[in-house]
Amino acid sequence: MPANYSGTWDIVDNENFEGYMVALGIDFATRKIAGMLKPQKIFEQDGDSFTVKTLTTFRNYSSSFKIGEEFEEITKGLDNKKCQTTVNWDNDKLVCVQKGEKKNRGWTHWMEGDTLYLELKCEDQICKQTYKRTA
Ligand code: ECB
Image (tube, rainbow, N blue to C red; front, side):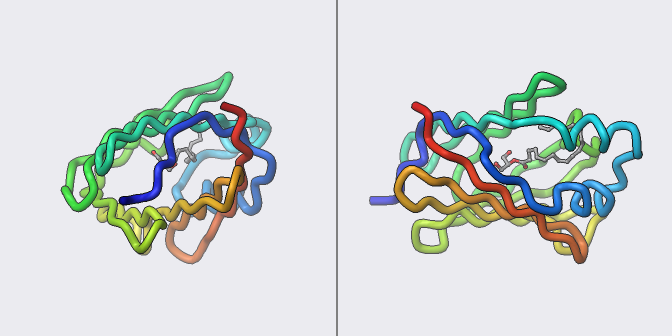
């Protein structure tokens, strides 16, 4: 039985989001707005099938995937790039690799009780986010 991430999660900590956005090539003005946001994650999970919504007052982002199945991800409203993306289990962690123009791009999620962790990486930058379950 894989872990179940289903639920609603609100951000409580966001470390080096600025560095991650610089690595992605996000312009200054957009970074200043994005850095103020308090994203909410909505996970909808049915076994190995996921929809992850990232909601903010500025922009929303949604991604749907099945574990182990590569898909074409367009990071619309983020850096607007095309990636060949795969998400796999590493025990109960979700490990995503985003192959494309940027080296070392991907993210990892894991849970500890009602805390959800997310590490976003691009090139030599790592952004560490922490979320608390609110539903
Ligand atoms: C929609 C959230 C933030 C919108 C910020 C708008 C502009 C900034 C542009 C680019 C910043 C780069 C990425 C934003 C960081 C996170 C958004 C979702 C990233 C993601 O890949 O989430 C995964 C893992 O939870 C599931 O899609």
